[in-house]
Image (cartoon, rainbow over all chains, first blue to last red; front, side, top):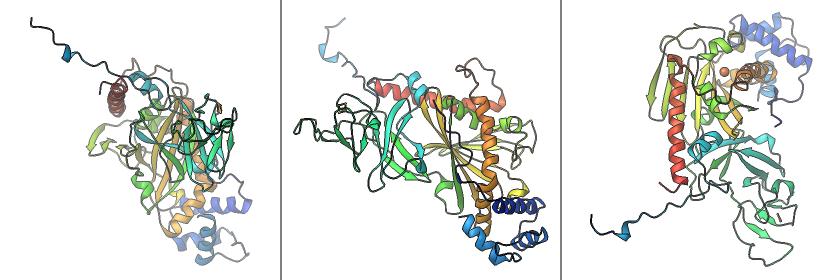
Length: 71
Length: 359
Ligand code: FES
Ligand SMILES: [Fe+2]
């Protein structure tokens, strides 16, 4: 019997380096115990990570991005 | 001795066939291939595209899944009423399937709608292929697996976490080369979390020894540690609802963000006596930006970590001896295991009686 054993079932397409970097950075900040939105956004900026348009993250731009990628 | 009374001679019980088989099943066979008269998850919705057909084996029977032209899922025994060719080898015709062998057309209710080689044939209009009640919900296709053709589907109801808005969920589906009963034993055995999953991203915390108790509920029971909660796989609820399932929670580390532990709604459906299809919905009670971030992290990173944990389960369940559940030496951690086995044994006996015509 051939078995169904797919690791990536919710997103079969590969992620872009940008998405992976963003994901890793979010986890790094959460890992420090920072779990509020302002803390997360300033944490991303402190890490030198930019929003998609090259500017600093704001709560609005971060939420827009998550609405898109975290449906 | 009095005179013989011919009217009291007991009528010989008439054995019945289990739906999708042409024979009656013993209690042992029922517990090997899966108990009936309940809802089971069959396949994730995304694995059955619009206009597609898919053959699946469930409870030892071959079935055909197809989506009709309106997107509605149908599930028929994969067997042509004419001379038993698999319907899955045939052609999807929108609302029906045409058998490859002689072209007989069967619709979603299992009714023969055309016999092209012999129009007007008595087979036309006959509902002669078993067709199951199907519901699509929570990203999966569910079906009611009847014991006999008289079985009436019970009302369909999703487990709590899958129907409550405040819980967000992702479905994971896998197929394991192990008996379905070993899956049930495994989830009713929280203590394996501290050992088998001790080096995982989610289950490295807490004690490696514990005491457990069973707590009855009106829909099943909890099997839980008496001295620790929220540190590892510390409790499991077995629920006997429209469908048997387990509900449990596992802590997330800080890096997974706000929202507390993740929940698991677990179910399995036997493929055959030696293989099982496993459904896990990973859930989290999160809202707003926290929900979106969790869903983003789940796809980019957590899904892979969860999969690695699930592979640890598979690595053990697939190497267990076929008779692993005989001659064991159970201890206090195995109360949940003994409980679930007793329950299923009683079910198998009751269903075998019905098939034997004795109930
Ligand atoms: S076996 Fe299907 S049409 Fe004859
Ligand atoms: Fe496990």
